Length: 192
Image 1 (cartoon, rainbow, N blue to C red):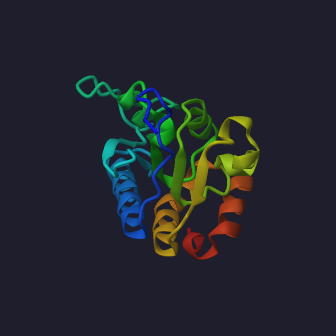
Image 2: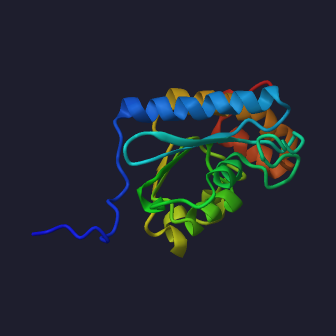
């Protein structure tokens, strides 16, 4: 049997727990950089099937546009995932790629991932209010039928992400959203 060079790309690679931990730790590092720069604490990376990080993004909603880096800033759509997608431009074989993010993608970023046909999405921490999964189950959305979703695979990284994002959730979300965060992460929101 011969292999046709025009055949479809291989499915998204599943990585070891050690690799997944490393990728999610990198998203949390980027989230901390965003806080230092005055933005919301969210970071994202894209990993190809060979396990190489091909792009990094972080939330830039509190920053000015960076003309040198050609990065959006101070705009509602300057979320970590959107920063990443703008940087990567057109994705080659997106169904073989994995998006790692520190926080469950919002409806905009989840929708963009679906439209781009990203093969796999993994996040460290659920977003009880702003995450796509609260509004529509990930696997119920027609565009997400071919996307594998893996929420919060590591309890310690989930907690780290929740502690990092909880002050932002309290500040930015309406009372209803903050209550959902308190229910989902009672220890991480205590005292805020």
